[in-house]
Picture 1 (tube, rainbow over the protein chains, first blue to last red):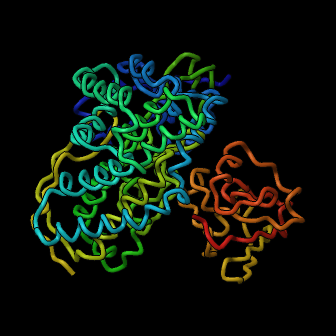
Picture 2 (cartoon, chains in turn purple, blue):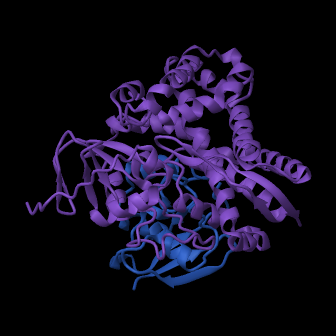
Picture 3 (cartoon, chains in turn yellow, blue):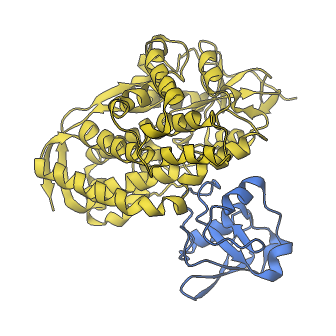
Length: 392
Length: 107
């Protein structure tokens, strides 16, 4: 074996300082090595595009038994599609994916489009609003809650739950500790929710029907609903918010989109590349493996830095520049391999509906200062005031 | 370079050269051939790059993996014998002459 000296870095990738502005730190790690050991986190960071994609494809070595960075959450996630390896993963994923494929979603695509048009009409008429609260959060909240059939008190809590569900995937730092009780509320609700709590005809209601028909175990209903809420809410919110922030930060790019709204698919891919909603996920290294000359020992935990890979100059030209015509459909924001984001079809429909509604109505807009939302796993904003709009 | 023939949903035929190592999906994308959407960028996660392989070629292509087989169940009107996802077909020299038909709908 040709193992050379191990690249190491003393940063804590979950510190406020790094999460406030991670990209210079990710760039430094990426230049340090394709694999960098982080003693403070006891993690082996995978930093480059090709390394990340290869690891995600090699799920027999890079196991999903430890996708979270603390043991409590990894125990809580046991048995979900997210945290299960082959061969058991296959059926879990199929059940989760069935209602989320482009074909399955075709029947609600037009409805999502009309909801997006109505929301943006209303916001344009108001003239100023918060791009996060009134748009990026409001829209998926409405779409996903309606889809799952969530109503009443649960609907009021679903945003808090979604954000906490990501914070608690981090290491046991202050942020995780504070968010565990909130994430616990979501687990508890999913465990106790009954079919009659969900709107008839909704996806959530239908899951209980599947259990009645014996297609899935009755105790799986709550776990599946948990995955739709925990995985489907904060990620989509963050991506839509980031897209608006990118349009505001790069007005020449937004002007191109407003002139040609058909670029929206490419623009959304560029947002997912430039600032993926989830910075990283964990993997459990099941057996010794040499990656680019570095031996990662069996039993170690790898940190797969999607956000670092997405800015790798070995793969993308001029990676720190935001260009809406780049169409980087091979970005790592949805992962890769057998655990590739199952909800990406829905996320894409929601984001393209709302962003194209904006591009078709708004010529240009001006924003005030946004507030960064610090989360162990996700990168987004908590507010972004839109001060002025020039409608078409 | 291998030549691949794509019959698009409008009834037009495109014969293009696709470099060894690219996928049949990437060959369509790089040549602006309509009908292959590949929403997920080639991650075998959307089944919108579905084609029907010419019967003469079915046996000559590498077999489907588990993920491709599962995703094909979610495609539009899959054919039990001829359907493939083009993001999972990596072009080799002996695929010269491959003929695929793109379905009218991907979702």
